[in-house]
Image 1 (cartoon, rainbow, N blue to C red):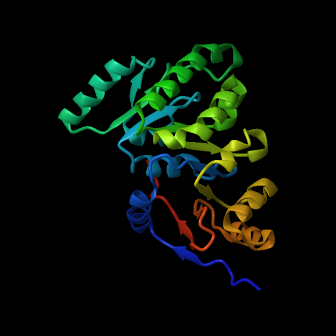
Image 2 (cartoon, rainbow, N blue to C red; image 1 turned 180 degrees about the vertical axis):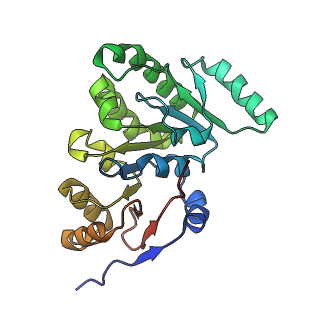
Length: 242
């Protein structure tokens, strides 16, 4: 019988010190938890580990996401102009973290305003390499029509050093590649069979064991699961954001 999965509990500082250099460019991350589980708090903590960040957030900026101090670009300005913007960020000693698109209501009638902007931004980040793209509420982005594009980019982006971080509540409602392609899955307390099955597959562990891990996870804490089935599962709690 296989030995039980090792679990290591780390405070956020120790976790970030380990995960920052471990998380390589092109290694995608999926964040999965029910509503109110702290997805955005975790995402902010992870994105703060990256130098070039592009955010697609059809719901706009909530108070937690504002902690990233994102600067808004209404559209992808073109690769040459974006290079100039990044050069200026470097001269000023600033990190390069941008929110793409205008603020709209989350109604279907408004989605056509954002969809072409998101496509251009993702295409530009893909061409330039080295970016981390955060897809806030992947289900909503899929509903908008970005699902096929996201599938193609998730599969091909790794070779370009483009990293996707996606957040969603129910894996059954998003593209399958959102759980098939990531190198890292962050999951919180859940009874969702899809999350349990996929996490067990990544760990190479029995589903019953993984179900027990996820059911025992405290609210707002996270299991960090990588594709190395011999590595321990890390548990951490990101700092609260005001």
